[in-house]
Image (tube, rainbow over all chains, first blue to last red; front, side, top):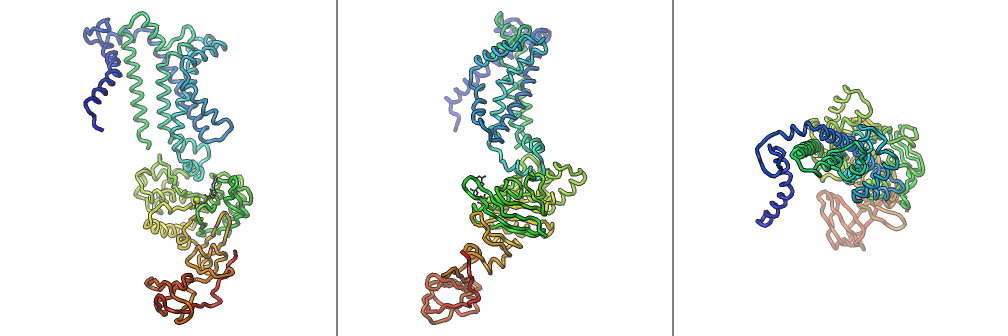
Length: 262
Length: 310
Ligand SMILES: Nc1ncnc2c1ncn2[C@@H]1O[C@H](COP(=O)(O)OP(=O)(O)OP(=O)(O)O)[C@@H](O)[C@H]1O
Ligand SMILES: [Mg+2]
């Protein structure tokens, strides 16, 4: 289909709506003045300010640590779930498959409240001192992120030729060698895609984190929220720009990592 | 020496009996074909030998040992799948090396054996290629090399040539035959193509609906078919009354008589006639020649009449 003028306009409008706010945010992170709407000259001041804001740095580090932990666990758990659903016949399999979709479709706020209830009841939210207090948050993130991984991996498995597994066994590979040498390498693109999804879902999660964070612990989105309640400062712009850069770099990495496998 | 023996092996899937009381033996170094129409249980029989299906009854013996309970990876047999099942994420050479790597073969031993196997299937130039860069016939040969490099006692081939075009299939048939002579491994070839079985196998087992019909050399099956099914499966056959039959080339025609030639087809070295619309007769060009509507009488030697069961 040819791109006619009206279509071009729609496309331009869509791109504008999608990217203009981000572009403005990035641009004003380099603004030398305090105002977020008037350009006053180029500078790295706000990056320096952000980098020396201990609270912001801590929250940023917390977010990365939580996302890293949640991603690793969610990827392993999601992949294992997908493989189990594909490989074995067992009672309640359709039920388990259905349940997998629940965290994906249930409104996040409900999941947040539910997790809050569990965490408050078990004392998980307040029992642990600071660095350890990130663990329950990561656990909450695993709970909502791993079904996404499982769904992505399962989609890849749907097109998988089971004869490849049999060929591997026939050539002398046991269950473990077949898993590590045939199944996992072929699932790698799906696992990378799932991991990236889990990472970004965790990194920018606000609702569930807000509900499961105890006093004295904060993550980047939660901190930004509390900061903007007073005012939007270019310092937040700078920190957000760094976050965007990190996510884009990861996406690029994942894309390159994924490419060579057919 | 008997390498593989199936003793009264039966396999059911729900209500279908895929393999029904099958008894067979395959000798070491033999080229054996399992022949039968689609759905007769050939693949199922082969998968039981490889260890991917468990028999519901009977025993499978390899070198005299019952293999029940031995997983596929521990059986000294290898399978070439109909769909090839070449690993798409590994190069040709790594595909061939796979079976040696996973069984802990010393590194310095792997490279020469892979090279040797690739040379055997004439793929020594393509070791670094990825499977998606290969044609169907080449992928087929990767699957073959991958199995041969393991030096199994028995190689199982499930309709290995059915996905290839006619010309390539002919080439691969003679290549397979050459390979089998060179490596001296017993081959069990599954096929539904009687010409393929005839031209390649030392012995053929004919199956129908899960049951064994007859086992024998191609010449035996042709000359002395035991059942009507086998008789009709190889070459042309005139079925007479009371389970008797006669090959068209054994029918003799002479001029004059109550019968009439209804069809005459010239085939270069012989004529093919149809007498009275049913009886087929083929006669060498050196013999008498008849024309359509000519009156003839047909006869044969009683020794040439076949007596078939069922
Ligand atoms: N896993 C299975 N589940 C149920 N039925 C099966 C299964 N495998 C085979 N069958 C049935 O068993 C019978 C024999 O199948 P099999 O695949 O052994 O035939 P085949 O001789 O190899 O046929 P083809 O020449 O078409 O490959 C068929 O009726 C088939 O439908
Ligand atoms: Mg088959």
